[in-house]
Image 1 (cartoon, rainbow, N blue to C red):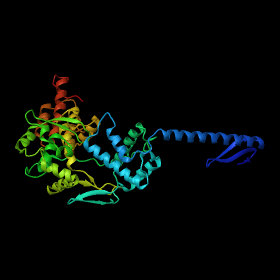
Image 2: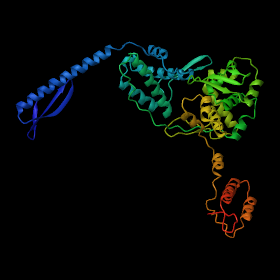
Image 3: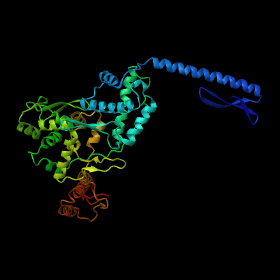
Image 4: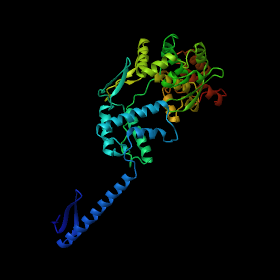
Length: 438
């Protein structure tokens, strides 16, 4: 403690509760400067005491001993506007378990003890290293656990982890189990996703050429319903109304209910199946429950067997390749085909079970090169200038255009014909002959 001169003004330099302060006293007399310094120390000491008391009161308002497992039970039972589906709940549970493992390693056993610094440390870890906790696999009835290799998350996976933890801690804050949400200040990463590609018509024909293939049912149901992988695998006969032609399912991911009309090709397929199990595809259901990822790999292997290319793509900054064509691409393909054939957006949205039209539009936005060529073919040759008839033989010109039409220029020539005919129908030139104006 003490004051010192800077020019003709006294400054003070002191510490309160371990924090150092340096400021101008705005005094030119040392005695007055010392009085100012004492008043500042007293003021700041009082503020620190008030802050300490406030923190003590806030801590006293929350349950200090709630464990991570207890927090999860509270979160699951907490009443919310929308209850997550089975798939989403399992994902939340996996993320919460990973964060719990991280905290226990740091000797944090109660959720009330989690700080902003802990949240930042966890976010930094998963961003640089991927998942924290051990992965447990079951092989031949034995559980095998090992620490995962560095497996960088995509931006969407990272954001899913942070979003889940923000949501859980918001619920715990509302329940007075934590003072403040430690993840509230964690920002999401910019997306680095590579959009999935749809299957072309020729690829769809390949996928449907062998009705005896084990994955044929997955392809059929996905292409004609747009159901997610989990919903296809767990589709039960009590959800399939063959009499009235409807599938009435509940999305495992979102919990949304969807009503989907059974189109004729799918109806024929369903009628050929033997109802030997509660599941429409019992073998697929068993494989999905045992190892979903293995079933996904089998589908990609099937694509390679058929000669379908561009299945995965390398993403810069990520250790895993991103899928371009996989089982989920069948859902995108369904949405694209529906949009291409004029099915209204709200109908596609209702069938897919999406929450927003924007999400549905994302699924439908898969214009192929052929689509673009056909759509833009109506634009005429802008270098052709249509002059007034003057002495022209318009009839001969029209016949010439018709004779020059072929499969490659059909749309362009048709557009030019329509343009000339439109002009002929509304314009009349000097000598009474119909002509083509500029």
